[in-house]
Length: 87
Image (tube, rainbow, N blue to C red):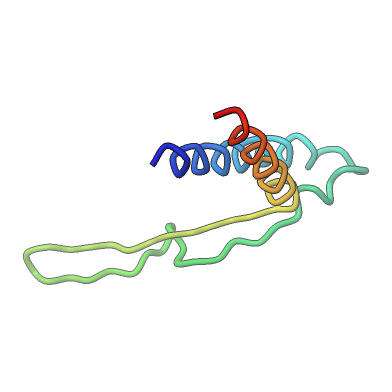
């Protein structure tokens, strides 16, 4: 259980750091390729609705990945393997 939580932490931390790097690099012409990415899913701006007259449910889930996030997630997996040796 402890290992699963640690893995989730490392993956989320890598994704957040990658997102920060991509945002910072998007304004630099040489590093703008780090911000290249795609978004998939059901757009949250226009979600799918189920209207049951009493309850209205909206479904929307988007997932966006860019180059910097992928690189940071891979680096965080190496960090996770290093952290497992310390536990």
